[in-house]
Structures are given as structure tokens and as C-alpha cells.
Image (cartoon, rainbow, N blue to C red; front, side, top):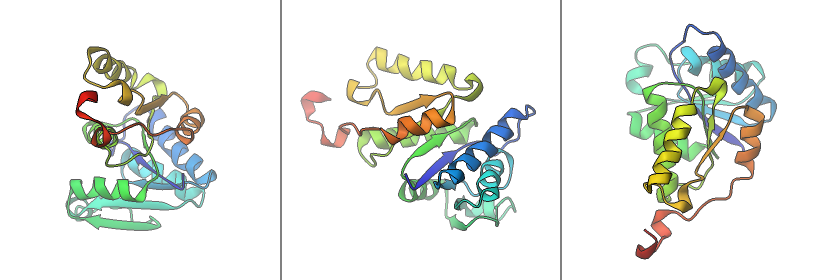
Length: 193
């Protein structure tokens, strides 16, 4: 993987572990020679993940919607900063520029990005690994919910391993590197659906 999109919050929680985590994720990607693609902001975890990568002389590509760029939250320290018309174009650009996705703690926007990456993988719009860094047990309930959807039958057996979760970044990167793409819905026969 040459570049990974990192989905994370633009907020700065009171607990400093979250900012420290984001900084370390960016730094570790850069140390491994993996470029960072992210939301292009300078605030919160978003800014921390970029700073971590930049401090290690890593490649940092930001993709920010015009509305946010115009509100002075854009990170102009990025190696490259793309300004796009809106969120749909932003997520499409993440997919085009990245070889995989990692979600670290975040809020509603982060969840939107994660679920879209999973949905697009399931359908066949991409065949890239979708990782979830479950630091501090932040995503325990989401992992359980994803399992519940599969148990009930809302996630087909062929798609139950799209979400790759780990508690530690090195473990997550190893799992993502060995990801074998599944059969997407676009290539399934009606009887398989």
C-alpha cells in the first residue's frame, strides 16, 4: 500500500490519548513510507494525523470541501491540498488516491466515511482493504453491531470480512496487507443475493 486514507474526527476530545493516537498513526505511516490521504483540515485528530506524518517527512495529501477551505480550517502545510466541491467528491477522491482506508476515532462524519468505504467495497466500486483501529476499545460496540448485522443476515457471508479491525496499528496494517478481496455484489448472480 503506497497511500492510505485515514478517516478521523476534526474535534479535539478532552482526553489527550486521542490526539496522541492520531499523531502516532500519521507518524507510523510516514515511517513505513506510506502516504497519508486525509480530510485536509488542521484541527482535531485530523490536524494531528497530518502533523504526525509531516513531522516524519511523510507525504500528506489533503482533500477538503470548498466550504471548509473557505472557513480557514484548511491545512496548507500538506504536500498536496485538493479543494473539491463537496463531500461526495471528497470521498470519491479519497478512494481514487488511496490503496486502503483506516478509520480511527471520530464522530458522525467519520462514520459516514467508514460505512461508505465498506458499502462501496461490498458493491464492487473498489477492492481495497477497509481497516478500523479500535484503540482504547472505542469501536467495541460498532464491531459488535457489524457482527450482529451479519448474524441476522443483512451482511452476506461473502462480505462479512470487509471490515478489518485491530486494537493496534501494526496489527491492523499487517491484516490489511494480507487482505484478499471478496466477490462484490456487482459480480454475483441473482441466486447468490
